[in-house]
Amino acid sequence: MTQLRSAQWYGGDDRNAYIHRAWMRRGLPDGAFAGRPHIAIANTASDLTPCNLHLTDVARSVEAGVWEAGGVPLNLPVVSIGETQVRPTAMLWRNLAAMAIEEMLRANPIDGVVLLGGCDKTIPALLMAAASVDLPAVVVPGGPMLTGHFRGMPLGCGTDVWRLSEEVRAGTLSREEFMRSESAMIRSRGHCNTMGTASTMAGMAEALGMTLPGIAGTPAPDSRLLALSHETGRLAVDLVAAGRRPSDVLSRASFHNAIVTLAAIGGSTNAVVHLLAIAGRAGVDLTLDDFDRIGSGVPLLVDLQPAGRHLMDDLYRAGGLHAVLNEVGDLLDGTALTVTGRPLVEHLAGARIWDEQVIRRRASPLLDDAGIAVLRGNLAPDGAVIKPAAASPGLLRHRGRAVVFDSVEDVHARLDSPDLDVDETSVLILRGCGPRGYPGMPEVGNLPLPASLLAKGVRDMVRISDARMSGTAYGTVVLHAAPEAAVGGPLALVRTGDPIVLDVPARRLDIDLPLADLATRQPSPASTAAYAAPARGWERLYVDHVMQADKGADLDFLAGASGPDVGRESH
Image 1 (cartoon, helix red, strand yellow):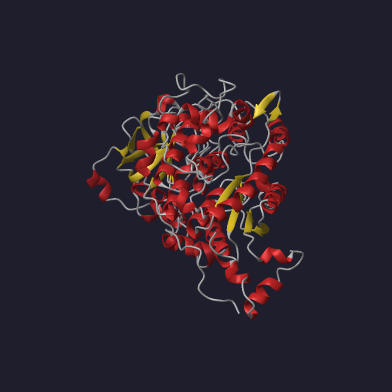
Image 2 (cartoon, rainbow, N blue to C red):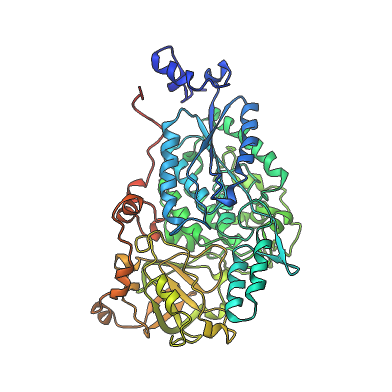
């Protein structure tokens, strides 16, 4: 094995090596500084990231595995982002977390890293950082919570929040009953138990080859998660010995496999911006069109909320991610390696489906073509996305009259007004919620339906936005319209009453007006007044440098990698 990176700090008998060793001797044996790889455990546990609270317990199992394999484990708390807690949106902080984690991995005397994540933005941020610094790295996904029940029925966290809250607004569920469901929704430790962004990104991490094979989707309270975490600690030491880095794993082939996986599991649209950002850090030329080209013919095999009926512990019981991927093995790129040094496809042998109600056979999918659809047209020249598996089939081709909202606050003020001129054929449009406009591209694209229509039994409408939506959400929702309104995208020019045409099979999203007419328009003053204009701090840096959704909404100066080298001493 070549000289360990940590030896640049600890090797030798000069003053600087003395300082580095002496301050780390708080219980470490002498041998800790002589040839033993130092493995950071980048831990996103936080009391304010409730889905990641248990990761400190997971870290202990990783530590034991590192010690057993001859390494030195080092706890490294890193920036954590609680999807349900932070304002104005967790997405605003993903790039900050990735940048901070990258710099801490580079700055410290470590040879490899185990990345502990769970909640939506934490796994993407960890992978972006790992790709940029390119030290040996492996992910441990924290796992989903167990299923809670209310009135004898299983609850999908997130998905059933949206559903039940709409029933309250429709008058079919009392507010008292809605409040009673709250204590039943979150039954155990772990992240969302639907195929939301957290579950999706755990699957993406494994499909990319960046986890111990078989770990993604293991429920957080399951003792097998701790056993697999222990094994991951051992693997981290092996990665250092082999010199195997993210750049050896994160190839175009691995992103191909992630896109196939995304379609087969009915994963979150948020995975699109995260995978684009990770690819940008890894130097892989991935584009929005790749999601449609690779994923459009992939069948949906997992019957899970929000696209289906079941929940994550059902998926695990039914055979897990490997059983799904084994069914679509011919669609995977067999050259894509994993952190084990072996191709992903080699780890699928023997995977079986144990419940065909949860994981469908290839011959009887829930949906034949389940990939994320990429739409283009004069409303989204650089692309927009829709998840057909979560949409109403009858709305995938639709023409309707625009009802425009200039901001989230405008939605709150007017959506339920009896004066709102809207019917079930209308197309609800929300603008000013893209990366720069909000800022941070919040999960507000799945607009609530007007109360007047809920009362009539309407439960879905076409909605279009430059925002995102929660991976736990559902409906005929067009998202990530690029360029966003705040940077001059055509969404800024739409007026209430304009004819909007959505044609998902044709991959089109248009306003049915002559371009010359649009060219004469100016953005609404109410819309431009609502765009973010921060004066200082992270928000100012973000707004000045964030790229559009079709580029992964990373910061322009963070694309690519800087490697692990640090050129100067600290003393």
